[in-house]
Image (tube, rainbow, N blue to C red; front, side):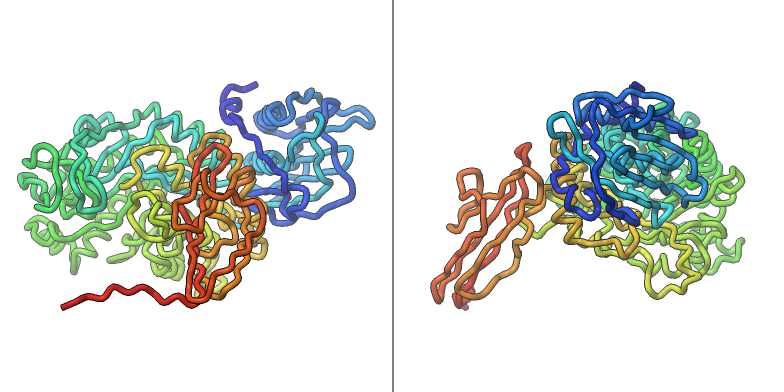
Amino acid sequence: MNKVLSIFIGVLISTSVFAQRDPNLGIIPAPVSVTRANGNFILDKTTVLINQSIDGAKSADLLNAFIVTKAGFALRETKIAQPNQKSILLTSVGADVLPAEGYTIKVTPNQIILTGKGAGLFYAIQSVMQMMPDKIADKIIIPAVDINDYPRFTYRGTMLDVGRHFFPISFIKKYIDQLAYYKINTFHWHLTDDQGWRLEIKKYPKLTSVGSVRNGTIIGHYPGDGNYLTEVKGFYTQNEAKEIVKYAAERYITVIPEIELPGHASAAIAAYPELSCFPDRDTFISDKTPWSGSRKGKQVQQTWGVFDDIFVPSENTFNFLNNILDEVIAVFPSKYIHIGGDEAPKTYWKESPFCQALMKEKGLKDEHELQSYFIQTIEKHVNAKGRSIIGWDEILEGGLAPNATVMSWRGEAGGIAAAQQNHDVIMTPGSMGLYIDHKQSNSPDEPVTIGGFAPYQKIYAYDPIPKVLTDDQRKYIKGVQANLWSEYIKTPEKAENHAFPRLLALSEIAWSPVDRKDLKNFSEERLPVHLARLDKMNINLWVPTPIGQSDKTLTGGDFTIDLKVPVTGGKIYYSLDESRPSENAFLYTAPVKITVPKGEKRTLKTIVIAPSGRRSVTNETILNNGAPDVKTEVKK
């Protein structure tokens, strides 16, 4: 078996106990159509595996490896089935008439037929793996069904920021495995920022020898309660980046690199000060910023935020950036090269005699038009290399570059404006829950985050196509993306905690038709099974609080608390005496009836413990039967 596929399989076991009754057969994202038929296919040792597809050898290996892990035996591979012999057939016959990345699955009592090519066949395998229930006496019983499936959007992405904190190659691969399993096809790799430059550029070695290292990092929320006083460093060699590109491509995922410009440039300027409008100025460090090491000269930033020292739009800078982009383009074959373009303060440009003279020479009325000139200059070079730029919605300011694609992050307004100008758009608004560095609940147990509130339910409710667009303009909305910024995410474990289960909600809004979305089915039928799978794979998921528990005050005297476990195989513990629930509290096994005397209240506190021992945050519900609110009287 192919070694890469063996690694990919890992422990890809779903505990699909709900698959038989779930209309979506446990599949995330929900398929376009699922039509049940009569009977079942019984997968056992007599079943054979047949690959008749053009490019399905790896997919066949992947499926067989999964069956070994799931059922305890491998299927014999053959070119043709004998009469009445049960088989699983992979074929590309008929795939040409399917939508891009589309597939079909037909299950009869004698055969499973998976039809697709390339990504489509690969996604058919993911769906089959998800719909297989646990074995019973060395047999897996799969219901007869017809599935027709294809994506709503061509771009289904997630961004990982490695500029603020560096994550190892092993984690990047593990992350990509999960993206592939949920049919997310784009990995946006944020490689440079004020706090670190993370990609080897051979022509400019100081970008990594200087720019990839910072002397410290603030502790706690900005502006910080102190400094860790330890170096944060790390970068990817070009060979390592190529390795990730290849690994992702084998899973039909495109890697889009991001090189930030003209702002978020502190790390590059620390390495090459001549890229600044004022090379001899020390990096500005606020008196409120806890700092480690020297404050002299140009420094890699140790705090978060937006900084005035951005790239000077000089011929030297453009040559520098073009040389960098040439090396980036040689590593990354993606159509898009992300150039950032966000949060670029114009303070230094306003103060710079060079910039003011350049604006006069070019006939630019303000610094926003200077930024547009900057972006368009870079775009010409990227276009000349046969690629296209993509940038955050600030690239609209001062006039949009002719062929640019816009990522709308400051709400939907930027995406709407770009679509109305006939530009392609990726919707990724933080206000709609797509910034998955935000907190997932209002519990005080939530780990330190940048703030905000983005539970997976908020992501699930989002429709990436704004209703204000006309039918013609809607075609420019190419997809949707979730962003994982890492200011407050120092480890792979915390990155996983922020990503899952939210990326599963993202996958469904990116793939499934609007009329197939069903939050109740997603949350109560399919998600618990998938979270159990992630838990078993040692992915440090965020464990949801009990299904059915309100986090608001309930009024009355008699209450029936009816809860469901959000992770298959997990347990709910609760308390009513204000104590923090744990294994020593009450174990929830059935609906609980609670009577609160008149004029009193009780606090129901719960915690979910997954099979691995991972715990949810504490959730609480106030049960109030007329007790007055307690108010603190301030005496003068």
